[in-house]
Length: 329
Ligand code: PBG
Image (cartoon, rainbow, N blue to C red; front, side):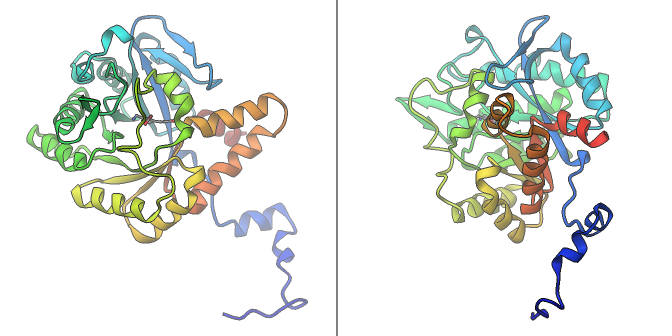
């Protein structure tokens, strides 16, 4: 395509006023496309700020009305739940993750009672529940793939039984989407969608989350199951396989250092695409803002707009409440 050159073409013509700029804007951020993560702690009366994530808290179930009220008022449509356990509640297999009265199961029931319209998504993984902190069953220092699948399926079914609207496996075992789909269908949850953390990279950007969820591996790292940050083509294979196994939505995680992966996934697949603006991305912005080095609101809008522009339909972000407030002003 050829276009006439200067002076016939002047791209500044359409930048001349705010109204004109609004008119031709290509990407619009919308609160309806945001998911807000919540950390659910054991015990009562817990509302504990997470050191590395200023403005984010661990909540006990009895305190949830405070935050759920804010989320609903902000018109944020969905939350993503993570369980945070005391060391004494963890074991080798992460069995607390599929108890009917586990923290996440209680939180699901409480939130659905407080706000039936709010979409409740649950992170399905073992690392928040295992004593060794890995996302699967460990034997002889190795994280076993196939033995893990049944436990993940059990956890997903227990979330669905408690009323979860969507289950989101984040462990990166091979075959977990199919295993979870089969188990959900067998138990009658044929209409519960699966959001697959399909292309999840072994990232340093999860550091603050591991403090928040006390889920750091006690030995080794997650490079044997999460993806090598260098691989984009492999990310497309991961996504393709998860869709083939029955994923209803797929995710790229983290977001900011992986915008190329988001763009390539968007071009290739037609399922809804979710991007996770992870803890480290949040903490970096908060730290720089606290030092007065950046304009936080402006930078957050720019980051989230970039994630959408790259091709994400939905963004999971700890900034969701702040963004909703900024956009309603
Ligand atoms: C659990 C899980 C992690 C995150 C989401 N689910 C941590 C990890 O894989 O170590 C990270 C989220 C964030 O950093 O905000 N497997």
